Length: 216
Image (spheres, rainbow, N blue to C red):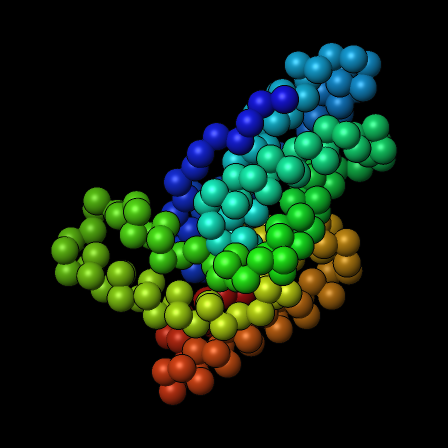
């Protein structure tokens, strides 16, 4: 099996990573799975190549460090490799895969205090927007620092839904599929996660975050 390549991400609060959507699911996935189960190991490499970036983005948003995210994402694909025989045909492979990624990442984040925070600060500094003017870059840097400070107070149990919504740009319905809950439950979880962000921001700065209402 291949290994996860190193990535440099630029997550933005209220925007998707690289404006990506969830990887499209089609009959191609089913065909690749069937070939793999029939003994064609190269078919798994094709699934890996298609989904590795999306899995890494999810894991990175939850665990908070690129090297740990690399290891956890690799573990996700090892689990998928070993468990693909139990995948229920007719289901969406992407949903099944993302659920494994979220569960692995949340477990890792809870197991290590060093993985507690979302990684906005280091990644945003590492990949400056060359289109920004110096003054706009300074404003963006200050805003990123503020958001990072607040995100450090958001509990890990709310991180998965925020990452799926704002890093992966999944709809509420897609989030519900990944988390294995109803659409109503996904809406409630997202609402509570945003409320945690709002409350921590107000407690820290004494006023609401100006663009919080756009996080919907």
